[in-house]
Length: 260
Ligand SMILES: NC(=O)c1ccc[n+]([C@@H]2O[C@H](COP(=O)([O-])OP(=O)(O)OC[C@H]3O[C@@H](n4cnc5c(N)ncnc54)[C@H](O)[C@@H]3O)[C@@H](O)[C@H]2O)c1
Image 1 (cartoon, rainbow, N blue to C red):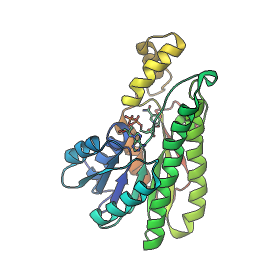
Image 2: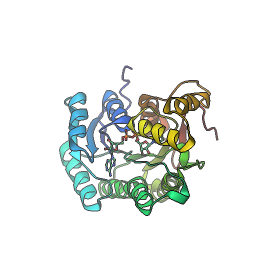
Image 3: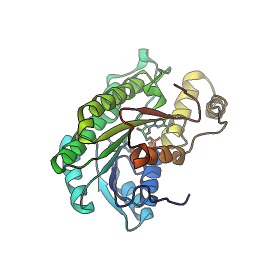
């Protein structure tokens, strides 16, 4: 897709940008004219994506569960990019399990990356925006599971409901400074996370991964699996001035799987 310079001269940080949706967001931001700090807990992946982007891409290792590292990377990204106007807090993980079999480790890990990671990334971004008087923009990656529960995803849904509550609350706090905070809620997106989930869900429901995949498509009114780029285009909209009067929203990006 050709760019429209919707994010011309913006300086962006994307977390979990080494693969899947984050990778697509980083590419879409760069296409729209932003320079992009491509961060991931896996530095090699972040570097590969920054290399794909070219001169507008810069790689950083960032584990979003680590407060000190999050602060350090935001500081480093500001130095490298000459400022920071835009943050996509996208890093996330999932596992699937029935609640009766769910371990504390699974609960804690999902909460740490999906909920606490969003908090830490948003906190550092907002600290920077307020200190510099930047009318910054934040887009958090939530999920359909941020609005409606799903079997075997209780822990994941809890962590993603947290993202929406956090997004709304922060949007109310910082709106008077011209800072916007929104979330995007993807559906069934073709990424490495989906591949893992197809195998888990198939096993838990006594189905083949292929049958689960077909069911995802059958429950999608637009009739196909969602691609990372489908999410990235909506994130570009939320990041750009086109959505200048939108804040505290959690926008479904699911081909119609969820409508509300
Ligand atoms: N794939 C889907 O169907 C789907 C649907 C709804 C929401 N989401 C959400 O979209 C986001 C991206 O998911 P994806 O499908 O692209 O997954 P993915 O596994 O393909 O990519 C996630 C990336 O996050 C990185 N990551 C993991 N833990 C991290 C940490 N602690 N700090 C920094 N980076 C870390 C991984 O290394 C990986 O590069 C997640 O928040 C996920 O919950 C995905």
